[in-house]
Length: 552
Image (cartoon, rainbow, N blue to C red; front, side, top):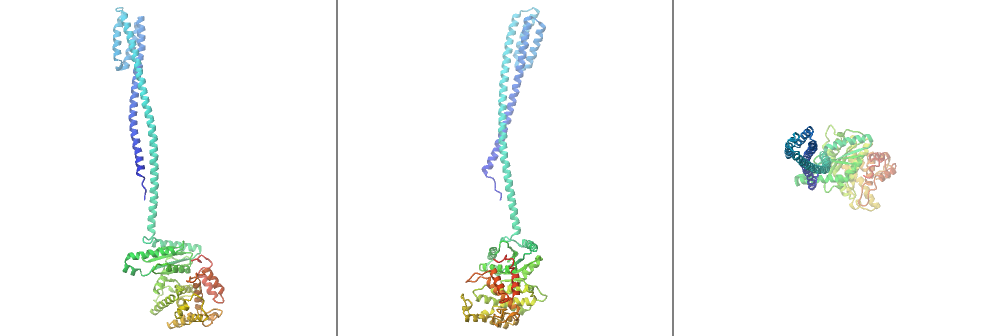
């Protein structure tokens, strides 16, 4: 918005302009008066000069009369007449007196009259010419002084007008420059506001769908140049349509804004969030692997104020088509929605197949998700533990080359690995202190009970993996004391994923030791408790060498 100058300042400036115009008009009048006085002074000076000439010519005329030099007298008389004629109307009486003098002086040269009267008239005329010449000189001097005074007044006024005008126009210039600056600033602010409107979502203030595609393409280019990974999380607000139908769209808008605010509070400084649809959001996480994005989704879910959202995650380690990465994150989101999980990370088995999955497979996956939620709900020390282990196990298996149906079964087994805890008494499962030997034996029994439950669900292969997910490669695990290659690879993967998740998640009785501690412990146990190849694959998944996400 352009700030207008104060009314007092504006009135002062325009008052000064009017004053300058008034002074200019007064100067014009004074200049005209000075010019008139100058002309009058000049006319008086000419009259004075003519009368002086007439006086001098009359003196010669008197001398010629005394010497009776008629020729000289005649020339002098002509000079007097010429000078009085030059004097104009101011010398009318003097011309009359000179004519009278001539009537008495001319006969003197013929000896027909006395020269006394002529000399008396000559003396009188000389005195009159002298007086009139002096008077004309005085008038000329007075008019000249008056014209000079008026001219001085005009000059002083002109200087005042010039200085005042310079000040006024300087102020006007400053005012105009300030106004131009304000207009330029307002124009820039308006352009910035319009650009912000064009690039942001008006409801949430997040960036919009168009900017999301531009930024994702740019970040993928940056990732390809630097060799740093990039993760994309698509987030879908759960049950928004139901909320709109029951409580109105205003309530739905408030929930959308609440999710946007939670996204801002959960992200790192380098992350960017976008609203790309009605209840759909996207988060670009530069320099982040899929596991870091999974942790972000868990923090987001924990921070949501009384409602839930579902996330699908995909990662890029090299330059990839933008639409391909979006499609993978979208498939992960659809998978999580279908299985009623809060988050899923894309792996290759999620790629669409030529034929749709069988109904019993869909039901099995849904049932497995329900059982996992039941286990997580029973164990008050965990939050989404089974889902997190399932996703991490799938990522590790992908690193180890699992594909297709085997990868899908790996994810399912990770989801069900702790289903046997349903049979563990709550006072043992939720005990904050160390377990006794008898309690520990009861806890160990969950692996066998989980095997029986999963096998009864018609998943014999997954049941075996669940049974042996606490076996150690040195043979000191349970329930069967298997060692080395006798332990199914899938069970070894679940063990590493389970241990890592436990060491990187907070519990009510302790804070998580963190990623660095977890990786070091796993490496310390590699070859005895854990399979070394699986630990190496986990390190690649969490990008241990970068250490950029240790605090995520």
